[in-house]
Image 1: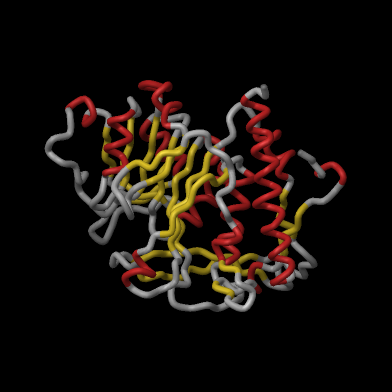
Image 2: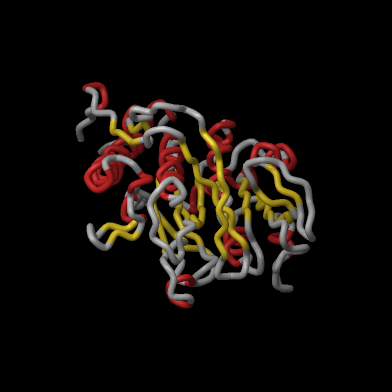
Length: 334
């Protein structure tokens, strides 16, 4: 019988075969390998943006915690969080008026849960929360961004994950939840560059794609930042095992299904080097004539009346393509 490490290694190989290789093969087929040329909602080819990112990594025990619909999250191996006891640390960004996920997680485990939201003054908790559970819920009127920002305009401040970990005295994040209205793009990039992504074991995030009522291509389409997000997550050892479309936009407002909940987890018992040796996917700057990078901001008017900011990368010169490393060293077989 294979060991758990061997199971995880096999899961990685299956993920590469079923998710990564088809993603970039399809990108080359329909857009010459250039995310800026990819039509997000492509009726002609029958492929749509989220089809490029299926959550095919395995999870032995996945459970959905929290209320039905928007607000609930899918978690992998809750029993492992239980096993950690009081050493379990959870950070949750974006609470607003629903803490059902955090409450159920706190009632099932002994995790300390730090809850962050700059737009509210107190947690939306029912009166009947047991004192032992309430004692492990900590509220911070701070938001998560790719850079520090002072409080203003009636809301709290923003800071990076690394600085917030120092504030609350957490070294390892066993579960990180992010529903931060479009700031996830810049946040994951900052986490990847700063090395804090390596401190996260599970990531539950709602992705907010900017094009809710358009279907444009080009550097401002937002497609590249989605490809970049998954590249950075996978390169950082976090692989998707679950997704849910948030049906609020399409079901109520008749817009594109631009918001999707993804759950990622880190393979157990394997180092980042081992994970990367198996996945072997890299972005390549294809035939660039210039390397200047400028950042622009776009706005998305959210269905819940909140403004969502997005970041995209525009590069001068020829477009950047994504390539699979098909060198002999990377041809892993099952």
